[in-house]
Length: 405
Ligand SMILES: Cc1ncc(COP(=O)(O)O)c(C=O)c1O
Image 1 (tube, rainbow, N blue to C red):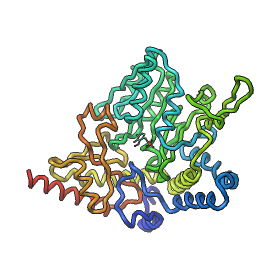
Image 2: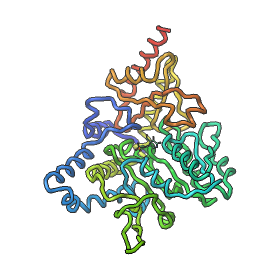
Image 3: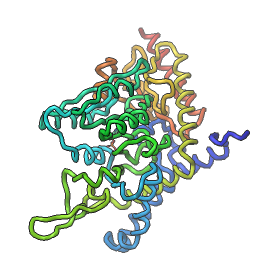
Image 4: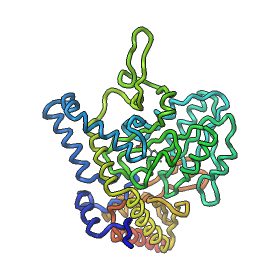
């Protein structure tokens, strides 16, 4: 039987030739910002050139259909309807649109997860301070993943929101987003999912997940331009949701003290946008859909697994990822070396990784007493050889740490 998930070496070669950055670097920083394919770069520059040639407003008018199709692409990517999508400049803004549109009163409970992203957690603290709502962390199972049964037992009539991160910024953990959706549905509690590190590296289907709100970014595993992101809001919730802030794009003055909100999710957006970046986001999503998200997940997880097992053979190296089937984010540390030194050693060999600081995931970092971790995040366009080169550099660094101890 042909394994349809596998990529042939000819396909990898083609994908790499369509990714100019692979000529210069071993890019293992896709959880930071992935390398854009040429098609994405071309979509951005062609749009920008058109603005320069005929004028910004005129280019927008000329490219209306193309820009509309970006909503359709996002919707196809996550199994939603275009009217349920708002485009944002990043995931944080999209998430804030969703969160700050919810209302809370004293004693209302916001349930979140250990792996929650710092920006989200700070927003909970601010809203808790303003409204008297309380923030509670859903217990984890022995595997370190959020425990959906524990969530089920926590829910009562004061539970106002379940808001979790699917794949965190600091490791390969994949929270059981679908099981959380079942619990949220059963209890009728709104469910906000941070899918920032998930989109582009795995299939996402909002119906199957059962989330009501989902926020994501364009520049990470989706391989879009920086400064792009989107919000999904389920139609039934959208109809009852007023954005925390509006302008004359999201709403229309209806005379006197009246205004009418747009009927679709674009009620969250504002009048001015980076249309060139949006064109790039659309191209990136179409590219990912053409390749296939199940195939992308298979290969990127396979490369991450190769990296983890290579690192696991090295003395003095600790891998920190939790869960039985982690995503393509590998975090590790080397005894006797700061994370920043390892990032520097890899950069010296043309290998891009990043540093995941404890402040980016405050609950998890406190619970596990995490140091600053080296984060290597491969994508499907990386190769076994690149992974092995990275392991070799870490091996050298760990040997020299041991010798100088
Ligand atoms: C889990 C998670 N959520 C949200 C964000 C924020 O995304 P953005 O920088 O696009 O606002 C990040 C960024 O690293 C992230 O890792």
